[in-house]
Image (tube, rainbow, N blue to C red; front, side, top):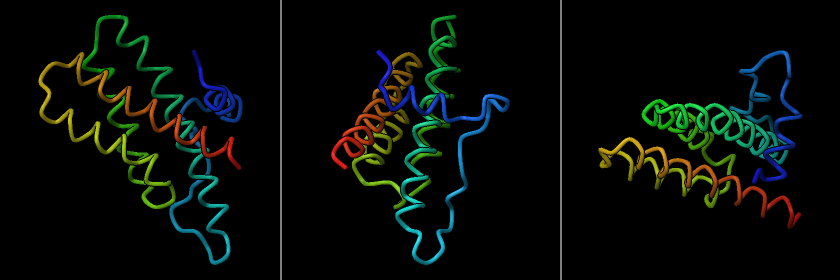
Length: 131
């Protein structure tokens, strides 16, 4: 089941550029912190959508190591958005990244990261529905 926010993220991304993940949000100007946080959430959802879009078929084609690498890049990118994202979005990703470092089985690594991505997406969905 695709989360409604992930479906929305798919339609918002530039269809002509499969690598487009949204606006840059690194340095918000004064008075635009809420705008930057909103853009960071939209970007994070697009990153999660793209990671799952490419990770799932990669895993299903018998390459869980490559899938785990796709998910890892997405998780690191989202965590690196820092305080632009709430702690309950970053925490499951940070935890998954930490746990996967000690996991040797690539299938388990992929699933640890996937659960972290799903938790982060669910946290963002919960926040958006409460606003």
